[in-house]
Image 1 (cartoon, rainbow, N blue to C red):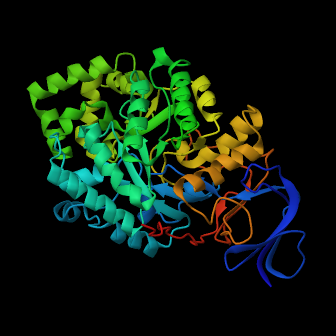
Image 2: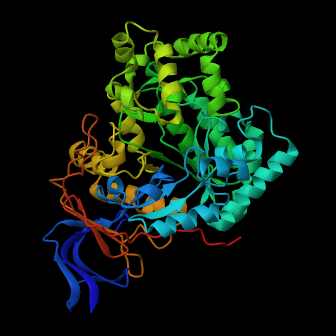
Image 3: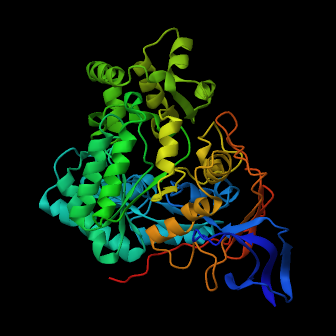
Length: 515
């Protein structure tokens, strides 16, 4: 008897091949048969012509911490995501130094972290990268100094140990301290530690604004020198003067690198706004020594004046595009959903940078923003490239998440399918599914997921193409997407018609040690 039998489905297997009518059977969490199937099953589903695809793989997630407190991961499951890759943008929960671990109640080793996730029994499968910023912090703290040979060796050892513990690669966040303090030479040496394990390098580049072309070159050169595969994270252009221009150059650079034999791919979220910490609007030098040191500098009148001048100069015409998304303090809740300029005006015409600083002081690391900085033409041009895959840059969140988080947390994958594939017709449905399944599985190295074939884990999404809609938006992001009929994780029904079943059948995926 089969565990699950889905009949009369339009099967999109993830390879890019045309869909076909068929049935699919599951036993012990794995696909055991595809074709015309008869026989008894514990659960039989008549798909009635709906599309059946592999579960979507979110290659760029930040659920590192939230999956521990929200293992149901409604924001992931209800849009069809069954596997996510955390530890992006240079930030992972481990490894931390003993002192930092005690202060933040985190994990000293990568294994400890993965074990803790496993104990929560998450609804999604979880794979992880190790963050260069976290490693640098463990060795050097928030120091702007150039790493010594001894410090680089220590970072290499931590990276190698994380790979031994099951990480799939390493990431950088080169606009964020402390990763941004690293030279390219340091990056090459530390990143090269994942090469013996077949790991890949994911980078939030040093600049996505005026110097985006220069930053792509640095990413390509760094990965090539380290001898590793490259994943350019959330590729975009945020400089308005360079819209419709710079992305043509960067894509041509990536195409040339691929022709020359370099293994490079990208991910992208399908929205014109980014999201990050509000403190990212403060010059990087102010973070030396960590968040507490930053707050002290913001409180010092002389240093604050210098930071104000630099921030306002770099944000000419931009403060109105930056909206407060999440705040912790009760007294500041009125600011959520408003831009920095709106908040400043409500405070009596306060200086924009000063407004931002005061929010950061009050909220520290809890203040989040949504920042409108991209154009649709660039989004579509980048998305249409065969080496580009969706990545939410979001996190596991419940439907009752406070504030106004970016809708990408809840709707990235359905937006690609419904808006850009079905409505805008950028690519075929089969290609869209391949971008969400087989392509990220291949990049990460997940040989038993991402394609519907016998022997693969039964991560499945059953959906109605015509009724698909990315309902989450900037005003009301915390809601499920329409058109997702059923989501199975390892053969277990985890969502049905926009409602989480409560199942927590996800696995922690660890890179197999093949050094």
